Image (cartoon, rainbow, N blue to C red; front, top):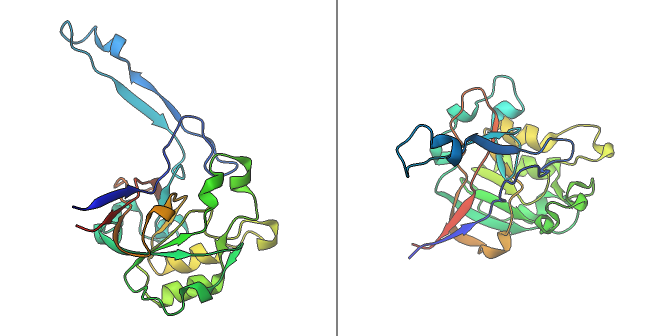
Length: 221
């Protein structure tokens, strides 16, 4: 029997995902109490409402996140985000270069980078500028090697420090190659190095470039 492993953060009202972005507002559109005026005695329903930026929780970036003419969520092929053969790559340190990927079969794979930074989730440390990130050279190797998807358990796959000057070469390289990016993964230590399928499917929204996902792996089966 297949084992399902959830590697996505839960979304909670008011939480911070990325420093400077507002937290989600989760509230009732229709409460159980209000619905009682509409339905038969003993019958009640609730309908919720969420107001949030698209970059909330564990989310997926499409090319439209970086490029004006890029494919958006409605263009995203399910084959790119569902049942993708996955590998986990362990990476230490702040800058993750191409060496950690050399010799690996990454073609068509969901390459998930395990840094352990998710241990800082929902703390001030999580968004600190010294978070782990890929280098431009690593991104080029992944793009040239035909990676199917790239994910990381850090606050950003790019360097966000002042020294970066606002450049985002990893997003630029991967999204230009049509490779979806999943950021803010968690619990990657529960996954084997290989032998699993990865799923990170967002809602099919025309005109949006990013959206939260329920990211999980299927092991065996």
